[in-house]
Amino acid sequence: MPNIADNLNHIHQRIHQITKNVGRDPNDILLLAVSKGQSTTAIRQAYDAGQRHFGENYLQEALEKQQQLSELSDIIWHFIGPVQSNKTRKVAESFDWVHTVDRYKVAERLSTQRQHDKSPLNVCLQVNVSGEKSKSGLPMDDVDALAQAVKKLPNLALRGLMTIPKSHQTVEAQHRSFAAVSDLFTKLRNNSPELATFDTLSMGMSADLDIAIAEGATIIRVGTAIFGPRQYTNTHQTSNNT
Ligand SMILES: *Cc1c(COP(=O)(O)O)cnc(C)c1O
Image 1 (cartoon, rainbow, N blue to C red):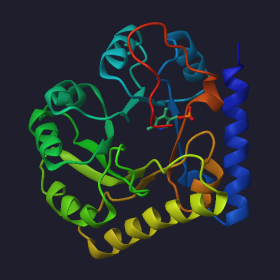
Image 2: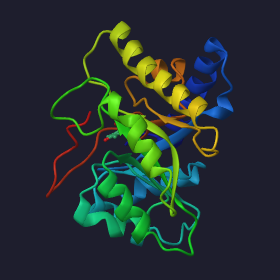
Image 3: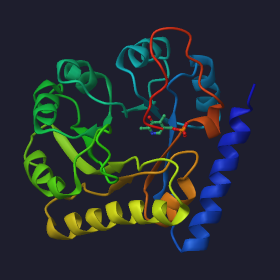
Image 4: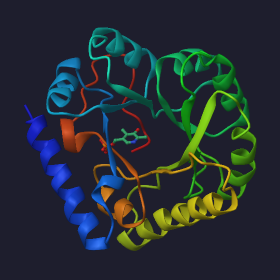
């Protein structure tokens, strides 16, 4: 069994070291614990070690865990898997954040279906920086137009951009991918001063979090480096996003 508290500690130390090396403030980095394929026991261990933000990819798995953990009412749940447009209602109702918006139709449904007495649903637009056909996410050139449309939706707060670059790239290519999204993020923010909440760059996972932080990430999404390997017993496979 991995020691989850030790692993969390270790990642926080890495965040401190990397931000120090690149002249950033460690408090500007949010560690999102990606708990897909992990048990509620493991989530509780992370919670007891002080972790509050958790990310899930699969709606059914996430809803079951949320129910089992309902007494931990200050957990902040992030949806980081592909959003199917016929499943938007549960996503809108049961999560605080969605990192993977890449179509207006999905954004519009999330806004309509978000309970109006709750705070707006925080959303990031997912950018397909590597141009891979199989990947979800918007082409870089389409991000501005979707951002302008999404920012008008009443029950969403457009928070920023998210990306998953192609894996197995050289270190230089990884830097370039993250830097490209980071530049786009800065450009959008500078061009849209009315977007007061546009402050989030969700990028970096267990294997590339150092590079992502160096290139400006504000949320890193970390699974295996916290929890160890994922366990899937039945229905779905591990995400092929990684
Ligand atoms: C699974 C997943 C992660 C975490 O990946 P690790 O390599 O386990 O850190 C991060 N982001 C997304 C979108 C994922 O699907």
